[in-house]
Image 1: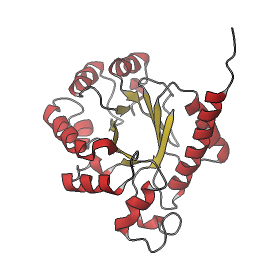
Image 2: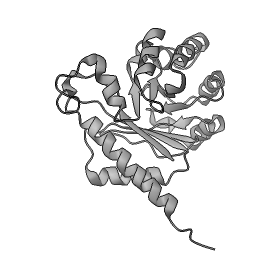
Image 3: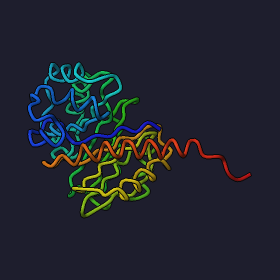
Image 4: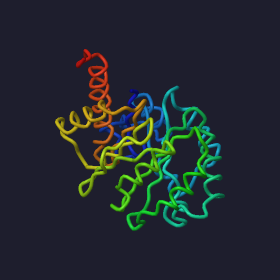
Length: 245
């Protein structure tokens, strides 16, 4: 399993000193970030998709293998609530394609007031072309049910596993990849090791793990630590001797 870790965003002046060199220009933040971490979750696409030239510029600044996970526009998830979104989805996917091989999964985060509607989700999943990687973050508890998980699995879409101070999504594999949003402000070494072990036990080909942005730059430190711990856990599992008959 390939595990990519990162944070939600990279362009934060408050990270100068704790993560970025104190005098690093903002224009060099992405290149510095991408030399140390392997993925980033882009949240500003929730509000507005950047111009194609901006996306092409991002792609040119990162090394091969680095990926951008894009948060889908609120117009689709919060305003249209997945219904009648054909044109908006097409526009979003067409623009995102400018990232080329640097395009990672897309995160469709539903509002907490959006209750389970399997028919609407089924119709929406049919809009997504095959071959893409899509993760769905359900924030109303009615979605956390076997029928919703089965629908995601039928289309190869991932259940986004999210954890914050108030909730935690069950870790259920519904796609060939995993998508985790670890949103607590901090995780101690024991908590990181526990998550690394849980990751290593999954059947995914690859997994994406994103930590929350906060001004103290704990997110990048946690992402770096998780990359090391999870990589070691996966390697240990792969090297374990088979048991049983």
